[in-house]
Amino acid sequence: MEGAKIGVLTVSDRASRGEYEDISGKYILEYLKDVVTSPFDVVYRVVPDERELVEGALIHMADHEGCCLILTTGGTGPAPRDVTPEATEAVCHKMLPGFGELMRAVSLKQVPTAILSRQTAGIRNKTLIINLPGKPQSIKVCLDAVFPAVPYCIDLIGGPYITTDERKVRAFRPPT
Amino acid sequence: MEGAKIGVLTVSDRASRGEYEDISGKYILEYLKDVVTSPFDVVYRVVPDERELVEGALIHMADHEGCCLILTTGGTGPAPRDVTPEATEAVCHKMLPGFGELMRAVSLKQVPTAILSRQTAGIRNKTLIINLPGKPQSIKVCLDAVFPAVPYCIDLIGGPYITTDERKVRAFRPPT
Amino acid sequence: MEGAKIGVLTVSDRASRGEYEDISGKYILEYLKDVVTSPFDVVYRVVPDERELVEGALIHMADHEGCCLILTTGGTGPAPRDVTPEATEAVCHKMLPGFGELMRAVSLKQVPTAILSRQTAGIRNKTLIINLPGKPQSIKVCLDAVFPAVPYCIDLIGGPYITTDERKVRAFRPPT
Image 1 (cartoon, chains in turn blue, purple, red):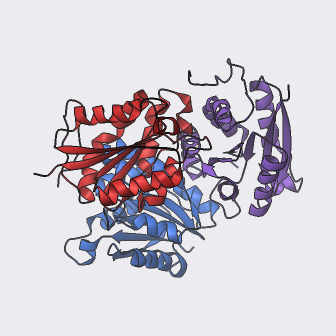
Image 2 (cartoon, chains in turn red, purple, yellow):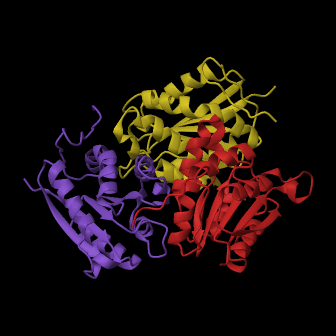
Image 3 (cartoon, chains in turn orange, brown, purple):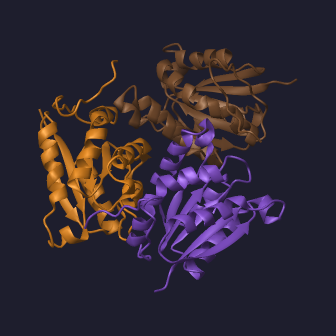
């Protein structure tokens, strides 16, 4: 059985220049290994906060690599160089506002500045793209909140059947 | 006194082909009869998940039938043929994001996949259009949450004065 | 040290014609004086519910007056002449959906018609623009909810360092 491909895209000027280690992208890799029990390969990339480069990386991971899921980290704030949500919206055919709403709602229990995050999610053909925050602790809070809905979403867009370790994330599929 | 006209639009490939009974649309009719105490007529229609047909039905119900309210059911998920929110946004002049936010928030208490719903609401001239989910149980949760604001919204856009059975839905109008 | 400039824009046909006193705009001025402890000047203006005039006032306050923050009041409902969110979106380069989500969520605890509010927030260059409701009591609920994130947002877009009276609003800046 062929496994799923999952993209992890770190959007960061400094990490892309090698000025510091990309702990956020690596944290997402660890989270996936810890939670996803069905087979999968990871496509991992770091790009600077340039809208065209973010769009290009998303399109490449979706269309050429065939990722069923892409998780981005970074570039979702209000600063001038934060462009990840715009790049995501530009490459998606359908937006899923519920992801951003829920991620902000759970992050708001940690810090009042959660409302500054512009994270969103959407679908490009058979790929679900989700923007995550930049900090590992915030990434965990967001992934724990939305991941239960991810496998069923991937089912609905014609992707591979993803399973999770139910002690960590309880994937929900409605009874048919 | 002339009553209000309320549109019920079921968006479903299978129901439109007669492959199964439209229990969702019928559930909405029952809900309205149970809750709305002012006089109203229903305009009811079933269309397949084709964006142009959904838009055409919404425009016809709004502009030609003169519905003050249109409730849609179906077609709000992430699947390729789910196009109801896009059709709604295309025909509306004003979007009301608070409806989708609240419907997802209350649905989320039922199932974690509620974030996959892209339901929205908006206004076309004197018509309030609200997207509802596909399943009767989810429809009830959403209508119970948003209906208290519906009569006042219809007042504000110049529609008829709607009243409700307060034991079931307590319509709220701010003191003037 | 030069202080910040904060714009207060009342959007109201009746207030702009002098038919009644602008208690909403004045309430915002009092709130700012009560809460913000760093030096600031206010740029205050009243315009009718005309999209071009609202846009023009926002642009003038942002680009010519150099306001780091503009708070609007009025014009966010579903009525035909409510155009403040559209005007805000038209002049902003980046939208911050978390503000509207949180303001509706806290307002919903007061009245079920809070979902009718289309308030949003966004950034134009170095200016944060936030739509507030029309009534002083609702303004307070919304500002109390979002103001803790405002000073850090202004930091991120390159504006002046704003401080608040912590007994009233606890501005949050993440540890660097």
